[in-house]
Length: 200
Image (cartoon, rainbow, N blue to C red):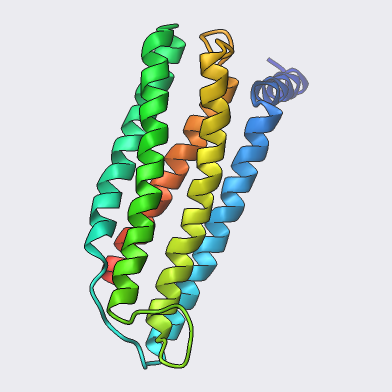
């Protein structure tokens, strides 16, 4: 094969690969990349500020451990839901997408209760007596919680589509994007949770 023919073949393969990426999926990946960069900035600022001193060390709320288990379970049920969508087992799909949504709500409730647990021991976000360590914790978990809320909105629209039979083996884009975003939020929390455990 000549160099020109090889180049044409490579170009055609690249175009083929580009066509396979749904525009909305590409947009989602760009959005997730921006979220990663944002949290990378947050955690870098956390480490820099911690090194400056005046840093209060405290235990993470017990409920954060429970919420971690809940969000891991939700990732599993989301994966199962996608699996059943591919197999056109729509009744099982409805069950597991619903369970995923409920687990997502449970995660948010546990997070809020965890914040209340922190406030009960005077770990506050702002004010004269607030320590930077507490403020950073609220920012990291709060911004993640806001993204979880956006994930629940995506889940809600997907849930409606599932019950309207608009999601099946021939129409997977919506649930694939939902699953990708939800798994991303799950792994993002695991990263934050481990980061906070190791950097107190």
